[in-house]
Length: 321
Image (cartoon, rainbow, N blue to C red; front, side, top):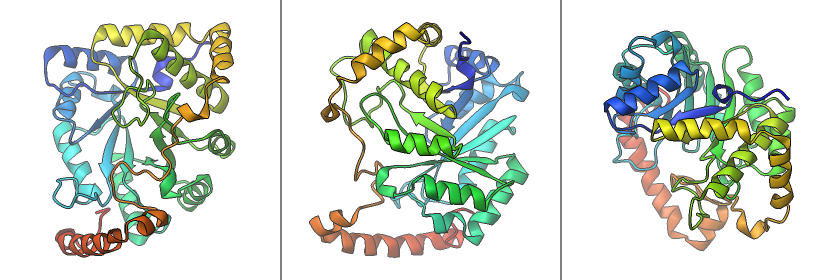
């Protein structure tokens, strides 16, 4: 059988402390061809990437997280997306060979095709070569494959859009129907937290033993094989951990291993799978039911929108920039 290659499907995050070991590991991952994940608020992760890329700038592929209209008005994330990208560029000191964006927090389709958005996507493509955008989504955003299809049609030939979201054995943004529909429309997806170890998970195992990690890797592999255009983000804290993952990634592609897992998966009760329904980890988007349950949310939103408008005058109320 033809084995899948790690660099085509795995995005490496983590490594936030600026030290020799982290720089060495990041350089190895860059040379191996992995996409690197980072953000302005991940301590010194951008500086680690900068140092690791010193002699191999032409090999760096990166996806950076940015925030649209961040709900916490006092946080440094509450600013235009363009200013966030500018900071990332200044800290890196150069433009990577491939640069993708992960846009977090709820942003409606109308906002994404507004005049400000069109100018923004054209600008970052011209200035930084960014032409692929992944929208971090949750079911509460009601941003399904049909809206993504419309978005890609609107920007056809200019910018490509995909989804990103938490997805592992027990914690999922995408159900099977959603995965099938996105696959049929050739939409790219990024699974966040593929090993199920993130604090964002709602179901957290008592221990992260080898069996649990292996099952998550096989679940990830199974989705890659079935639905193709899928990548996954995970963190590696050491070279040994990175090498062990690479070994498992190859070994667990064996059909007999996948069959054993899938047979066991059928017995996994739906009570042990959390689909993030009605949940937005950024706390900026609520369902109609939430407003009925907590009427004070209406006043809270009115107040927040008003203050947001006043504070955003500093950048002309253009959250794209």
